[in-house]
Image 1 (cartoon, one colour):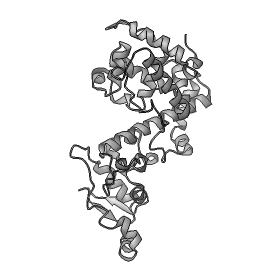
Image 2: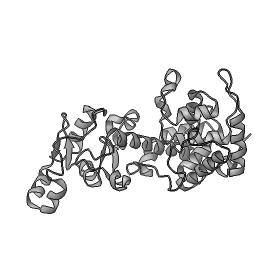
Image 3: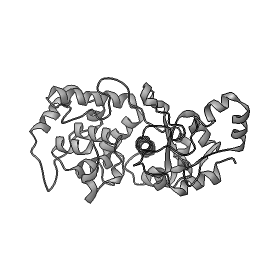
Length: 324
């Protein structure tokens, strides 16, 4: 049986041996699946940074996006099995493997360590003849860079601890993990949920600032685009925190202006500016350069196929945050 070191200290040689087993594995179409190897579990962890497993399950498992289908084919398992392992890793399944859960929490908390492990996996797979067609570099880290969680500005530790205090106490009472381990598991899962939410918001908004149209990816500065909540994470119900209709992408200047109530959005997606900001735009050339029209648009810029912001979140922002 695997222990924590088999995940955290995996070597290329160990991973190659496990990938060799995968290549020789026969598909299991029904009945009990074979035990997951550490390389499979770690790739499922990597997939959790791209896909929210809670959105797919049972009859909808086959609709899960990449990399879930590719991993299922590589592992000779159905997509539902991959999604179930992803659920184990964030502790959301009552009977998930202990080392799965702990390894997931440790690596989510240490992006540099996770990046190293991810590259070990890909190096071993390539050495065993598993190319991009079977195991794509779905995090874009194979040849450089370091993994970083997106959208973490709203999630100060104190905010998370308050939000999950009762859940942490309940899980500790079950006696499986220590209080420190339990807190790490729950908070790490919340941070990854926010990361996946941010990825989806950026894609939904076409990788552009919805207020001015700036596309930082055209000059290699993707991090300049911020994905945040309309109704802040701390004020949202659990279901609202991951709701794509509660998110907008913005450049730093317009993100801060929206978060502090200098900008808001009406029900027809028209952009409104506060009285104080309107005065500054009129009187100050530098302010006008950032918040005049242009560059500020009359209404939100969204792709034709985008999921539009929900009216309830826009109304909340106008009532609770906007400084008229």
